[in-house]
Amino acid sequence: MNELAPTIPTPVASPEEVLHGVLRAQDRHLWIVTADQVPAWLDDSDPRITVVSHRDIFTDPGVLPTFNSHAIESQLHHIDGLAEHYLYANDDVFFGRPMRRDQFFSSNGLARIFRTGNKIDLGPWQPGDSPNLAAHKKVRGLLERDYGVSIANRFKHAVLPQRRTALNELETRYPDEFARTAASRFRHPSDLSVASSLVPNYLYLTGRAYAAPLRYSYVDAGDAGLAAKLQSWLESRALDSFCINDAGLVEELLDEKEQHTLITDFLAEYFPWPSRFEHPDSSDRPGPEASGTVAGALEALPRQTAARLVRNPVIALPQAVSTSSAGSGGDRDGRPEHG
Picture 1 (cartoon, helix red, strand yellow):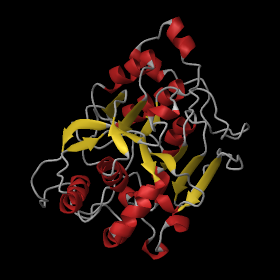
Picture 2 (tube, rainbow, N blue to C red; picture 1 turned 180 degrees about the horizontal axis):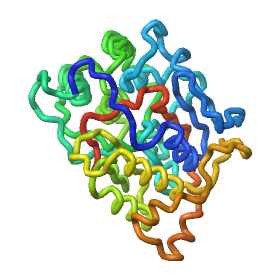
Picture 3 (cartoon, rainbow, N blue to C red; picture 1 turned 135 degrees about the vertical axis):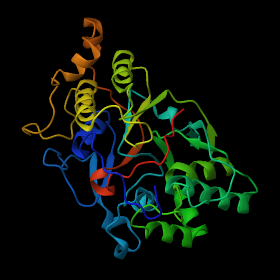
Picture 4 (cartoon, rainbow, N blue to C red; picture 1 turned 90 degrees about the vertical axis):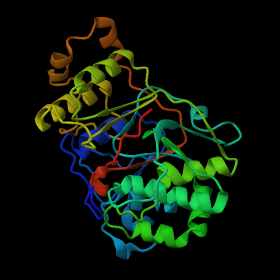
């Protein structure tokens, strides 16, 4: 991606289709941050859900509208009523099965951070670096200067434990960098990667986090192996979290129509039952029956496996924040962050 490049469009599934899957795996208070979009099927009268406008959290609303997830992530701690311990997920990340609070935070409040084997190259920022890689290098430069530590590993593009006080401390310590990131309408090399890099590294360096495992998987929507990977996820239901990204980093052997059909049908099969956050009489929400295209592409599942699919995960977790691509413009990582 070039400097000041706009976000990559999302052809594989609409923001509303993705949001259905996210909500159907959630049973705690959920904050959905968007640019004032509210799907017709969403029952935002439920006390466990709050739709938050960018206007309500940006220190300077004059920089809006924004299409930069880095900018949005730099302002999430301004959400009124947000808990000290919360989880953050981008719009392409899903819970894969029931999870416990202690899989994200220990009993004494320490955050669990999920490193991946992917490295941040040791060189300085170069014009050819993607805005995402540049944002990681920007974080590394700040931490090298202030803590004498050079970070090398990325983190899994998964559900991320966050501490609100840590965000407040970081914004106080780096006010210019936070303001510059918030003002970047599109991703820019001057951005900080706040939620995905700065916060977990800062928590670790200040003794408030430790590295931990996470059962996680990643797939690029254009990958020729998409159908097989979705099949394995459906059959095993063994993942804590998974990501379906359309970063465009593989040679796309599936056209956009195939990608859209496979992914939307997969989401309907994996999360078949409506959540408490959906209007019961909404005609445009997906039901427990998918179109059959995924089943046809992946072959029919065994009866015992199909029976397991009707169980909708109930997540016993702290509060969660999700930024919808309806509000962030579908911003994508410049490189997959999978373990």
